[in-house]
Length: 232
Picture (cartoon, rainbow, N blue to C red):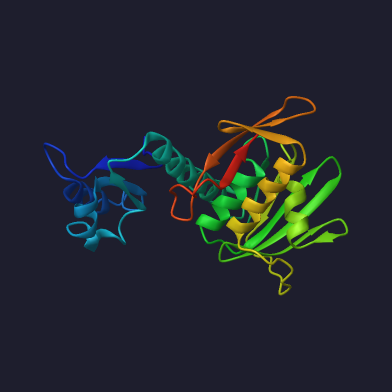
C-alpha cells in the first residue's frame, strides 16, 4: 500500500536520502509522495540545497521530539485535507466533521496549503463562514459578527461539521490579522474566558474540559511560547 508521507534520514547505510528521492521521483506511483528529510544543518544548507523543491520539508538534526511531532502533525493534517479533496465527488467541495479535524487544525491546514476557498462551520444551528486567499483568512462572518471577532467565536467549537468550497470567493476584507495572528489572539482570549494553562493543555475552570495545545511557529517550529493549535 502506498504511504501518505515518507520521513527519511539523509545519512543511511545502503543509500542516502538523495538516492532515495531519485528512486521515488523516478516511479510514477511514488513521484508525488511528500517527503521529509532529516539532516544536519550543514547538509541542509549545502548538499541538500538543490533538492528544496523536491521535498516537503527538512527536519534539522538534532531536534526535540516535541517539535518534530508538532511539525509532522501539521503536515499530516494538510495531507489528510488534500486527500479528502481528491476523494470528494466533484473535487470542489469537501465535507467533514469537527470530530475528525478541529477548527484550529482546519485553519492551519488551509494556511499551510495556501488554499483559496470558503470554510463553512456549523454547530447546533450556528454558522460561521471564513474566506481564505492563499492561506490567509481575509473575511469572516458569524451571525452579526464579522472579521477577527467572528473567527475567535468558533475556535472553541469541539463539535459540528465543516464544508470547504474551493470555488467560492469574496472580495471583502474584514480581518486585521494573519491567520496565525488570529489563532494566537483567539487562544489568548480563551485563556481570559476561563481556560487555565496546565502544561500542554487548556482546562476549563467551570466543567474541567481539556483542550490540548501544540506550540508551533510559522516554519513549523517553536513559536516562542505562543500557542497556535489546540484540540478539545
